[in-house]
Length: 354
Image (cartoon, rainbow, N blue to C red; front, side):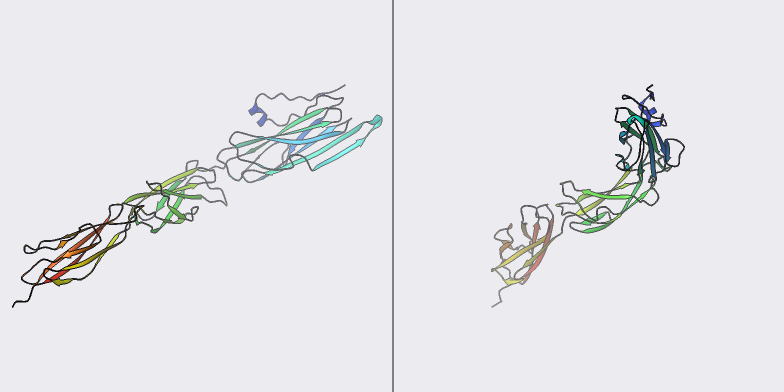
């Protein structure tokens, strides 16, 4: 008489937690029965720690007809990390096929699946392995084996993050930043993972070298006005939990340096030419500075500029009755509104007395 081996699971979770029910058979003219044993265990359920090896061996028995197929499949619980396995398809199988009377064949096949548990995880994970076999008469059988990987005990909170570095910097300056992690969970032989990010309000990015190290050099962007740059360090522990800390750096625009060249003396009532040159600053897309000349009245007399808003100007010296000193000042403004100025003293000599 044909026999059957049946296993009635109560729920998907129960399947994951039950030991093998001994296999089952359906179809054909004789049963296919399977049993599974976990390495080092009496049954088909085993519990391992992260990073540890595991194995399950299934034995498929078909007493009257030759087996034709044997393989494993695996289902992971929700959120479980990926699992490394070998021989799920039973490419390596120990096969014993014994001919009997009346053309019958007794088959006993053994297949072992091996693997390594995930190195780190934040919660227990369950992996359900199902072995299935079939013979020449269409009989099939299955058996379930269960692997449970236990999350390590430890601080389940997010890692705390600490960032140290300067609070001020100049445009284009490279500053040293340091990030430290504390708490969370770090598995034996592992370390925190670090990642730096940084942005400026106008969309510019901060350049980090390296970006994935606790210690980094951050190159500040060129800004038009004083700007707060936010450098952010993310610390991820072995359980893939991430803590984040931001560090603010006030970045100053490049300083505007201004110089005046030209004569610093001239006779009363004559003219001289002065040139104002500016360097540094933030020019943006305009690529140029704007200029403004000024002077101070001295004893009722003053310098006169042919244009107060050019970098090169003609200066009319006042008519004086005695040698006098005047000051010409040039103020240069960049595209960000940052200013720099320079002054030059001009000696005006009076005509000789007859």
